[in-house]
Image (tube, rainbow over all chains, first blue to last red; front, side, top):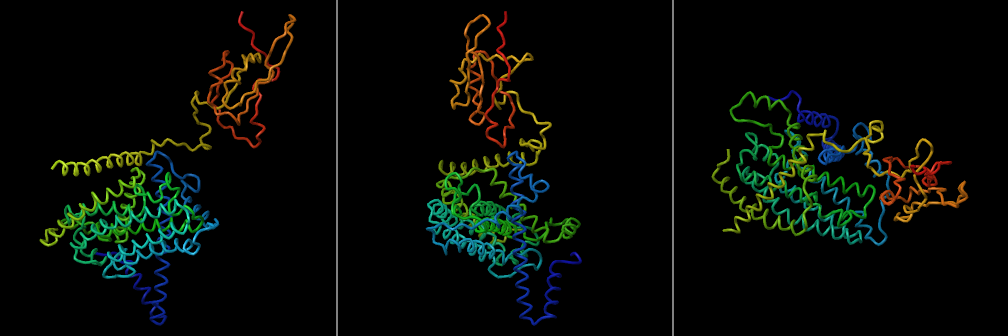
Length: 361
Length: 159
């Protein structure tokens, strides 16, 4: 039972309409531009929404009110911040490597936009159904460390360099257990493609039917994705009390805003990946045997399910940030190499055994 | 064996303590009535400032325009950053005696740190702290105040 108008039908209608007017190559080009604009609009709208939501949630969690002045309940605050950053001058330090300094924000932003490509938003709504989707996301998202190192090195500032080095060490070490956590689900569903993983969860989400290994993998993935985002409690790369602002100390105006945007884009993408891989993507929640309940859940569109799950993970990450104290650098590395990595390796072993025996539901 | 036990105990302790912290912030999130901050200019009418809040130094006068300050300058000597200047004058009493008396009690609000040492030091309890806090002005000269009102006198000792 599906809704009469689904997003897939809308996109198909636009596709056939464009093909009826233009040459197929021109229509394809127009579709690429439309998809790019849609992604940029989605990301910018989500970033504005997330900044406001995070500041409000942070306020309430710390017994404050959060932004209250701009607009009703401060709802225009994020837009006002964007306006301010747009109007500010982009300062470039005198002795910096100017080309690299100006290039670094673009590298970071482009990388974070590239990771959106294989994500399935709803049934058939996917920019590119690549058959190595999960691998693509992990590979591309690790490129952002190059942009961060470029920013830190070219700023010619010891705080920036230290922040970038810390960020590099952190991302390189936490990628291991993040990748191992994803491998658990890849083994169980037998495919690297995002749409394949979503289809494998039609009869139940992996976090429910995958037993203990997937739950451990889910927790590990949330921890490692928080670390890869350089967000609190793993925000050593921009520890305010030690390094001013880390790798973006010297940036101002729109260049700073691009780092900020890419941080929120990465946060959004990693939440979407966690929602897709562990919580079933756009698949509705089903309980085997309860037909009426399952039919009712099918009425809720896939895009609502997908964004609901994404917002749940985003809320968890925001909750972590405003609760936990920052780790010291040795504690950070100890957590990865002494706890997360051995646990992930043994977890992969268990998951392989379960996948081999076909013991999941 | 003990080290393996310690390893898993550390993981358990880490997760349980983090969960406690998340429960606390989650509790604050769903109880907005516990919020401590106030919307200041809007709630000026209902604003409550505790009496012991140290806002500024005042020299209370009674209904006969009399104060208790003898001009001993102990408060001036006790002030750590020189925000008090006591100007005294010599007057001749009707009995023909020469006497030192308070002329101007000059208070530089812009220099004051509101430590309250002048109030502690005053032997006459002539000055006290009020809980006024809206001190911002457009002209810096306004911050230099003369606390004794014109024509005020020292309250004569009880007989």
